[in-house]
Image (cartoon, rainbow over all chains, first blue to last red):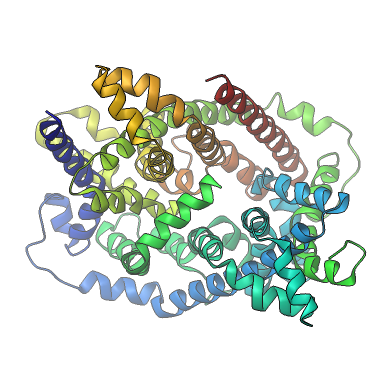
Length: 271
Length: 286
């Protein structure tokens, strides 16, 4: 009886899986068609697998430059978030005091603030200091990303006994060395989680870069995609080729790191 | 390490500086601005609670608040229902388990903006041509009416977030003791009874996390709203986040938009705290 039931569930699961992939299939097949072909038939594969749409989209998106901008902003922001949050969480977890408790709760409470509530003054103030550029954006990501990352690191650090720190101190290591050579390597699993959660967020973020980045040539993928789509609203064949291009880097990343990604998301939510 | 130590403050410095400049200062300034007639260029005079009085008479704002609330309630229920169902399917002993997890989770890696554009194509072009083929006119007007815009957003968010919530439920489902399930089977519990009396109470903590995440993500939604419906037709599918953005950057009413943003924060904070409190209490009772 148990076997029969699993067999039914298997079919149901596969059908749902196909349903989940259907939007991607439709995007993909139509991205190779001509404008006229999309007009006459949206469901079947194209008569001719032509890359013309992709060549146009690639150029219009300035794809290599845009991809580089996204990589630069995501990688620098995530690295800096990891370094600064791990250090802050270490200080908070090792010095148990009222100040640490207050700071920790302030960091956690900051997570409740919606972006819209600080967006207008943030852009104004940073604008006055000429900080509406990629550097300013990376700095802002540290501010917005720190809360959750500190929260996750703090939980992990509380499970590492302090006697370890003390032993290393007796052996003559200073605070800096203790942290980077002994404690930080032990935080590797949570560092992976912190990295993955922040990569997904920053790579895909649209609103903040749209407010901060205003020179052409510095746009990230979502930002460039937004302008591209606006220009080609009635030309689905080009829009779809652009969308497919924009997704390719993510799919490659997912293909190689899917286990770590799903585990990271799961750990990040459960802890 | 002690709080008196120089090292303590050195370790905290980068985060403290960033958080202060990026969140704390703008938040405090924001509260101040919301009591002025600031328009981005001139600070304007102090107007007391005028902005707050105005926004409670602002129909566009109130409509967006109501639309957002309806959208959040429907989405939270659907996403959690679908997410838990998917989790139950992929944790049962089936062969395609890993592949299905990967598939259901995939939309979450892609930004809401891009997902919204893809679904715009599905609703506008694919639905229309399928509608034409089978002769269903109701399929040909998707996203052109408030109703279809609403359900379009619900479908998009359910498709995207169910896989995320599934991952959370899986984490809790795998912690379930197998002996308990087997024992109940031997005692003759039906599938429904097993779910209601054993699985459901034990995954209750997952509800707390999942409800918190779905509620906060749907209530603060912006990207998908912008790319799928753009707030249209006639601003009828505009959610709070987009309404605040438009007040600020389209109408240039900075102070007024900021007052709306403060109210938005208060609502988000109250709902989040209430919900965590309520769920924690329920967990203990069960």
